Length: 167
Image (cartoon, rainbow, N blue to C red; front, side):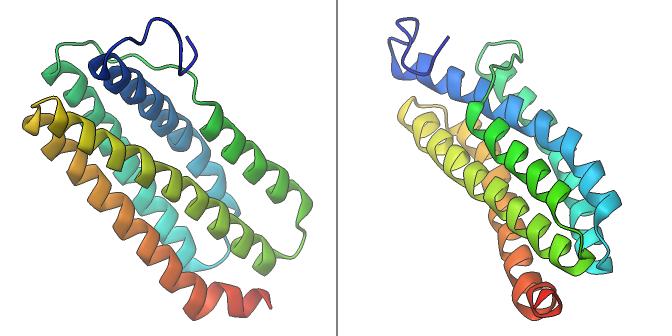
């Protein structure tokens, strides 16, 4: 089912589809982070990736909770955007030999992931509220807050240390 498939007729349908999209994205992120943890050489970056893996696993559980609160079983649909972001990250990781530059590249890739998640969760929160599902909106907003905090943490790490070392 494509994003604008005839199966999506209502805002509720779109909400569920987008929930399936972010569910897939979170699962792919959880699969990708261990490799990034293994390749990171900066201790703070490695720790940030480890923390985000733990958060991502919790976010998967929260998305599953939202599915059930909304009367659906958790199900994913392929998220071409996340596949593209993660594929690009893999390509970059394979091309960079300098470990400090690799740290900067992985950090930038992680922020691309965060920015995608922030847009998706922001949209889901707004739609949940529109659908009268403040319960779902609260859970989704808690994930959104985590994503924003991770993005800020990565920005500070990049500006204070990782980018300088890569230069």
